[in-house]
Length: 185
Image 1 (cartoon, rainbow, N blue to C red):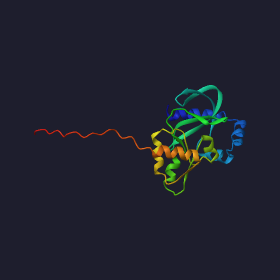
Image 2 (image 1 turned 120 degrees about the vertical axis):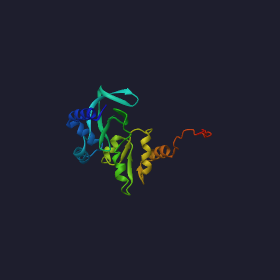
Image 3 (image 1 turned 90 degrees about the vertical axis):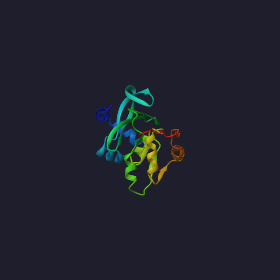
Image 4 (image 1 turned 90 degrees about the horizontal axis):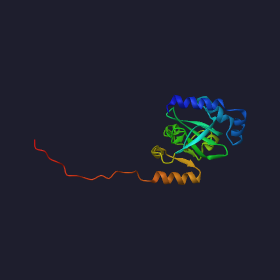
């Protein structure tokens, strides 16, 4: 799935947002300012029925609507994340390419001494003003880019999980020495 296909899907989902959806998301603690600020640079969120097709991936369809958010990396739309307001702790990705919401915050943070906030869910990320990160895939190798960040703030459960993930040693292949072969000239 390419960026233009993802763009069409999020645009379609955005066109389905009604006043009731805005009221619901504001009732969940997302400010109008966050929605408006995001809306200046990207689609803040959309609404679409999604179907879990396994492996943490969704496709459009099904009967129950979900909040759908675009996921960018280095300014490129790489994925969509879908979650339901009655269970924001469970989400699905459209392509599986994303590892976090707000990845560009890592690049911005590397130029400053401010701590980067990591939120537990996409809803919490929106509640926090869509700044910082929300890790969507805890086993993605890209998570190790957080080792470049000077300081991180998060809820205790997230800090424990993050310490566990980042403290694991890198996998190294078995390396054996062999005798050098000499060839006559």
